[in-house]
Image 1 (cartoon, rainbow, N blue to C red):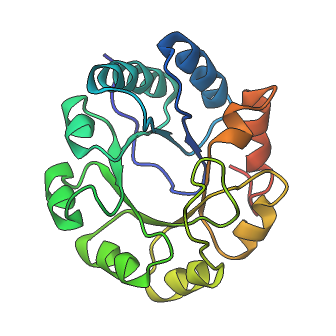
Image 2 (spheres, rainbow, N blue to C red; image 1 turned 180 degrees about the horizontal axis):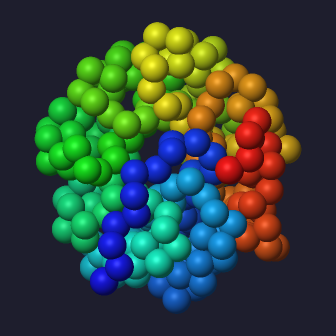
Length: 214
């Protein structure tokens, strides 16, 4: 098995997988996205049963390690630890952040979804999260019921917490400059990358929006 990717610079495209039941197709799409050198890749599948999630997570972990891209598991700390992922991204219903930080240790990444909730961001900073995420920034097919998060939250978090900030929800190549101008470090994107005609080229195109391309 290849070694875990080194600690990343938390800045750039944060590619998030779609709900795809076909593991072979998911792997093919993911490898194309990885060719575009995202900063992170998150496995997210809200519809799969446990066995399929375990299978898919293991396959994608190996692909990410081969590509040298850190691999994050969404909403499932136990699975992240079981397959030795590079980290976990947790929502409000996924357990206490402090317990997740302790379980992951210092060598793995902890990210927290904060929605538009400043108190959640404060909690993330207090427990030692590696990044916090706000969203939805724009109307989102993936998160259709998520309340809108104002851009001002990003600037406030950068100013007061000093943590990398991920923006999620409806982000596209067209509106990415607005989110980056607000101060976001990571752009969490599902459809605009994975559903693109050329996922590798679309992933690479996000890097061109960064003030200093990676």
